[in-house]
Each structure stands twice: as structure tokens, then as C-alpha cells.
Length: 127
Image 1: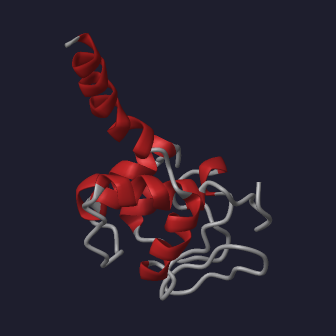
Image 2 (image 1 turned 60 degrees about the horizontal axis):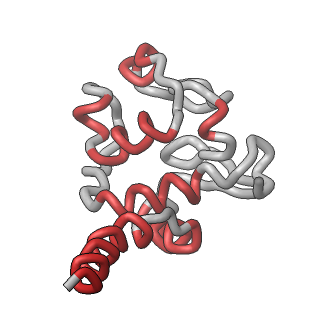
């Protein structure tokens, strides 16, 4: 009986192990973002700003990109939590921003996407 209880406890713990961020999956998921954003060496602003070094900067700070007044005024530090909240619902996190993307509703997909974005230094090299 004790073995079954222990086994059941281990099975309940597995989702937390399985929920570890998957950078490679994040890379695949970035295909949803790529029409408007770029990362990596030689990334340039597109319809949206390039996203290199995202965790090291604040909202509205990429040189040469024309941000909405809402994004300029938001003053967000793009840490893991803030980026996750923004990607879940961009219009809710920064009302009045001009990003048309409705968000990534799946928590695991967001975690993978955030991990991928956070894997780039400001110069586009991999961390």
C-alpha cells in the first residue's frame, strides 16, 4: 500500500518536472512572433522592435523604433514575470499599445517562449 501512495505522489510531482522551460520549443513558437519581431545576430526592427537582450531593458527603449505612447510610458522592466504577463494578454498589460497580437494563452508555451527570448544577449549572441 505504501508503494502505491509513494508512486501516486511521484506521479503528481511529474508535471512540475515536465513544466521545465524548453528553449527549443520556444524557438519553434517564435515563428508566431517572427513576422513582426527579430532576434539573434543582425536582428533589425520590423513592424515590432527587435527583441535581443529583452531581459536587460525596459519597455519603449529600442533605438529607432516608433513605440506607442502607452508603451513608452509603461516603464516596464522586461523580467520573466512581466514578459509572461505581457505575452498572456498584451492589451491588458499595456492598454493602448499598438501590438495586434492577442497573446499566448497556454502557460507552458509562454514559459518556453520567454525562455527562448531570454536566451539572447543584447548583441544577439546566445547566452
